[in-house]
Length: 285
Image (cartoon, rainbow, N blue to C red; front, side):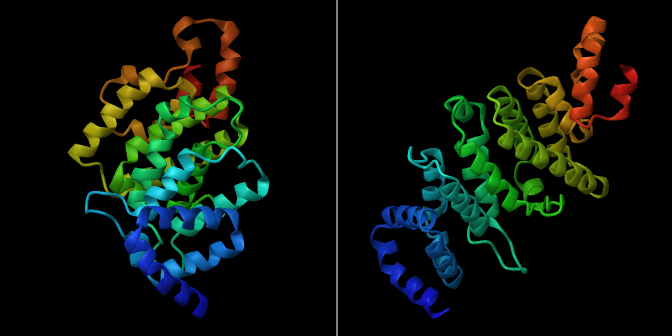
């Protein structure tokens, strides 16, 4: 539209003079004023270089960095359903691929600079248990847009080419953390994304087997998961992790199988059903 074209032209000089401040204001305006957000996104589509502008080839684009900074430091007064919906919509607008068009921000960079850093145990541990709107929730929103989660179907190409084992581990960490702090919405979103990514990656690896490098990466991730993630959460991604597993000791085993305690048997069975476990573990129980 003419309005988007005019805005794109007007943004060129401010982006050249002060790209950090200009990018910050664009993100803040898009969140605070959803009606203006659509014009901003349209302008970025008119002139994609505005969204991809960066200080060097090894630095993230200014707009992506501003968005990541906003999620890391969400304002204290940002506590309304309207504001939350606006930020979720912005995640979609920045990362979703629609009608064959490229996204505003690079999807792989979105994974590396937004999704993964905000799903790490270190970032999660800084949150108070009362945080109903934590940056990790919107990082999941960004991931949902990146993989185009619609009708429980995902496009795993970007994840598979970037850091698949790291993303699966990160989602597991979020599930454990959100369960501990009773953040049900975050837990459900992370669980859904993990389930669908595992199904998509499983289908991909059936036709494109893991390379030697990928096998080693998944084996290292499996070892890390065994010491840092709850067993019933690990079950959720075991369909993928088992493809590279060499040491069967690393299988996610219910405690009741190890202790033989009948009192915990039913608890473990319920956890397995909740994790959508395979029949082999259920048979062992």
